[in-house]
Length: 258
Image (cartoon, rainbow, N blue to C red):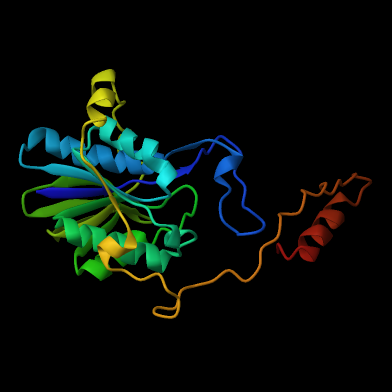
């Protein structure tokens, strides 16, 4: 079984995260970058299955700048057997539609039986890539799973709902996304780090995938304006002189909170 796991390099959650006011894109030089934790958890789901099934082959897939090689190598150090890194200058600022099209082309090229992703990334937080991939590939989908069980011909799990939980299942090939309810990824040890240097890492361009990023060929979403977030204003202080309740109600009404 070929399992592709989507991994993504993102700005460190605990560091500074800023947008460039010129391009509207994340300023990667503003702080540290790391492999997104939710994608590491997705990788752990695949590796846990591969540990028990010798015919399973786990490939880490990312679409990221050429500078993201270290993050891809981390996925290999954690345990992925190989990696595919899509790096192309034409993909700078790619929207969700183009991102899904490119990733689907790489998955199709690799002949994946199962695609595992996080439910959403910590930077864009779009949460729609798994469903878009399934649509492009014509695969079944099971999203936002808090438990996962993989067999030779199907995948099943549990999705949390407002009313409790919902069991879901899908035949392979399929795309699934997981939540943070799944276990943390194993930590890459020294042996894994050294082995990662010798594992296959294929770098692909748009030409390799036969995908066009030309807006004239396929209209994409565009950014029309961007501005810096205004500084946080001081809060309103209410002094109780017998009319605090009235002041509070007036404040809520003025701010359309009631």
